[in-house]
Length: 111
Length: 114
Image (cartoon, rainbow over all chains, first blue to last red; front, side, top):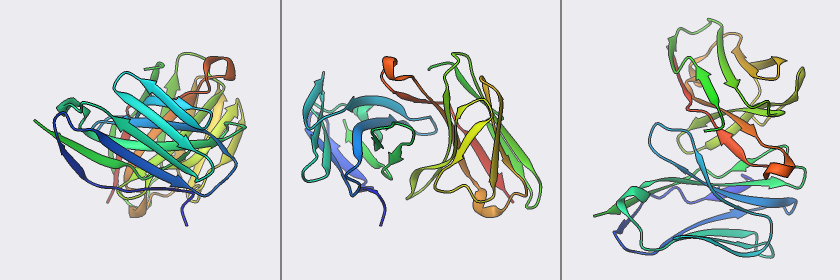
């Protein structure tokens, strides 16, 4: 069993839709949660990170962590065609030495 | 982009040949990482370094070795390349705790082993 599970999609939505991306994990030592966006043939870029349970908002993006359920989400409001990319969740234990990634969800936002 | 470069950006090689990929950073970060990315597997850690000459294995280290003789350079070597090592390889750095423990990635090296 992988330590981090993520639905690979692809997920196709119309422009303006609310997008929900999710990951589950099995290791209760994970304390630090991140979301990356990766455009085709590019390196991943950090979108958001959070240390604790609850919500964190940054513009159109909201990251949500539920440690009791070992479940994290990324919500994208008013999705745009430029949001079309692969989204990867990642997690790290408290020592921050290693990062564990989901397999990524490919998102396509149609104009 | 955290000043990370990778070389070469593309390489085609034959089974059994040695291959070395280079990652270079300009900001003196202590932690550096090598990942491979394959369809359906996401990013998998090969090796990482926490200082000059200090390295440790990741989840897919078999067939790979690394070296870090200078803070700015982290080399990944495939001693005898196999077709299963065809992949996209990403280098990353991690900022220190006082700068958020954030991980930033290089542009990637696309390696094909024939």
